[in-house]
Amino acid sequence: MRTALWFSVLGLPKSGLILPYTAQSPSILKRIEFKTKEDVYDEIYRILNEPQTKKHGIGQSLFYQLSFFCNPSEYISEWCWDMIQDYHLVNNYNIPLGENLDDINAWRLDSFNVIQNELNNIKAHKVKENGS
Image (cartoon, rainbow, N blue to C red):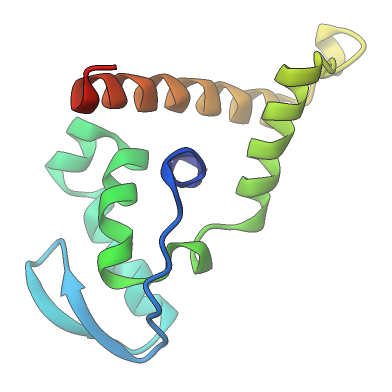
């Protein structure tokens, strides 16, 4: 969901890659053959375990690296896009999450907290990159 948010704010590229293909691996810095979705997920897991990912965050790291070796939209679950849309609807139209605090779905609340945190990261990144 973190990565989906970065793409929803900054744009979602279409690389045109259709399995199988050979592409640049950002983690091992060479071209490798991606034969299955599992090969793509292996690359994603390598990126998630890199020290730079811990420094920059999951959303930003995958935002900048996914399009080198896959079509990002194929690897972001539909529920992520739905949750982002729900977040914006709730915030833009002041829709309550529940009748009271006890009724609020914990998973949705956690997701909204992740989205808010990631929006702050995107804003900080834009300021750092563009000065605005």
